[in-house]
Length: 430
Image (cartoon, rainbow, N blue to C red; front, side):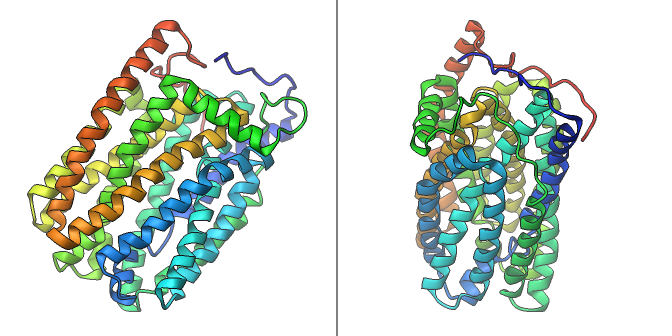
């Protein structure tokens, strides 16, 4: 793959300022997307308020992830075809509607409908978000700052999540479980309003005229699976993260099984978010210290340690293993996003990132119902042990294949923008 071409037409100062402002506006957008009061209680809400078992809860999640699989690539192509701003805006609006319906649903059918709408909303801004930030930076010649600035975005997400955890658990304790869910729809609506102020970034590799929708999808799959380093990175990280996220979804049932009060859920979940915020902020320095390869190798190891710890210790103290995975994921998201963005063209960026999310959704769609059923039938410790075994079986061959492809790529000098392990050049914050 050839190096990405630089912009041929200089940007006016006004346009350049608008594109740089996209970064802090996106920070605000992501804050409200993640400042959700349902975060600490959604699983307990479904179990206690709507009467679902753990098996039913995870079974309800399965159609959500399946729809993500179906919609990820089409909505990624929408972002590449009609614009990242359009995709982000419609995603936030649709998400706001889905959350409100989720909070007022009184039967399984309405819950399922809200989940379907929620999945559609999620796919509209997954992939489009990092493509929006990367292309905004690239347009003003600051793409090497992406790991640092995307790390800040992840940290701001963590801040929003922490506030949602602490405030949401208190609101649920003093009112009812559905009120924080409905209130979250209003917070998502604020994100939708913020999206109106975005400036659509240019994409410089596009040919004359708009490509057809099917052409965008076909080319994206060709790029994603035609380059071994990209292919194996997507398969490895999506698979391991799928197992890890399926375990994270069991956090609230874990606390509930140990008779922890609702108001304390936010306190249990906050340390992981705090550590993930710190991890996201320092990732660009960790890349310099360890390099991309070592960080990627650490990811399955940390997920396995978390699963083994939770599977071996059936006490509430074992919850301390969870922050290991959330912190590792916060760092990995930055590394993976930068790694993939450096190797894919702007014209296909959102679609290819959506392909990665699609593989992740496929992993969760299979893993989450399995862990839920194991937890209901034989207890959560056995579910965690099964997750540890799956991580080993899945990660070992894919990690070996990716390391070989990554090293061959370095030897051949095919990196788009230089060695991905190199430290990004410092720059003033936007």
